[in-house]
Length: 176
Image 1 (cartoon, rainbow, N blue to C red):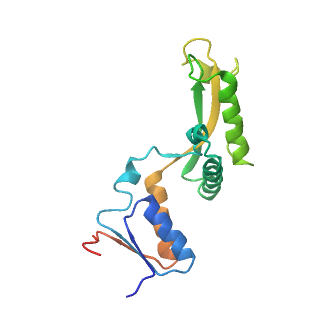
Image 2: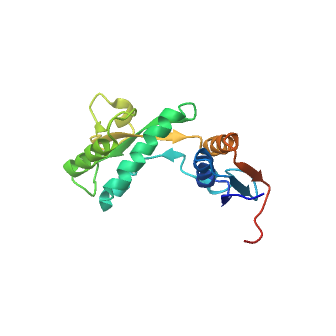
C-alpha cells in the first residue's frame, strides 16, 4: 500500500493532522506504538485556551488564531468542550490594574464574536468569585474552555478513519 502521508504518534496533533489530511483527500497512515492519547495528550492541562499569556510577547496574530480555533472547537464539540471561567486576582500584582484590564480587553477583541463570556473586572456581587480571595477581592474574570482531551483525540482519529485514513494502534515505527 502506498500512502501520501505517514504520521507517527497518536496524540492530539497526530490525530488532528490525520483528520485534516484525510478530509483533503490524502491517503493517510497513522501509527501509534501504544494507544491513542496515551502519552502527552493524556497529561495536558485539559484547556483549549486562547493564549492569553502570549499577549505579553506581542504575539497578536498567534492569539487571534488560537481564539478563532478555540471558538471553532467549542461550536464543533459542545458535548466534550465546556466553558470555564477563571478568576485572575489583582492583589499585589506585577502589573497595574489598567494594564491587565487592557490586556483582557485585547484578548476579547482579538477573539471577535465569541460564544464564551467576555472578560470583566470583579464586582462586589461576585461573591462566588471573590470569597476565596484575600484582601479586597480585586481582580478579573475571563473565559477559556475545558476539554476531555483524550476523547477529543479519539474523536479526531475516528473522523480521520471515516474519511479514509488508516489508524494503526499497537504499531511501532522501527525505521524510516
